[in-house]
Image 1 (tube, rainbow, N blue to C red):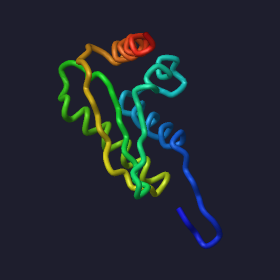
Image 2: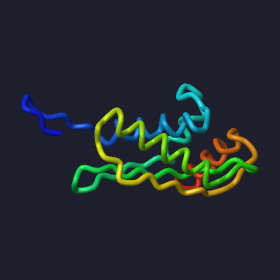
Image 3: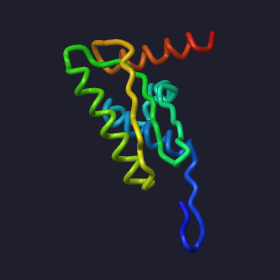
Length: 120
């Protein structure tokens, strides 16, 4: 972002942190929770040539609730927070539902298992 006095550059790491914390808000997990660290790998950031932001999130949905509504809630929260804090345009928030689980604790376990599979 160019201004008369200079420019402001926001790193992808900052965008990822905003997206991650926004994701945790939907899951109702605090960033201090040790389980939240495992979920961080499920959030990815991509920049467009026009300096737009695309966010990718992989997660499980809680059983018994609307998967579409759950995904929309994640999309909305991430998009609003990034745009409000950075003034960058969020082009898309793509949510991939990988499974359905009973509780958010199981979501955390799944993230840990996925992490282990990717490392192999």
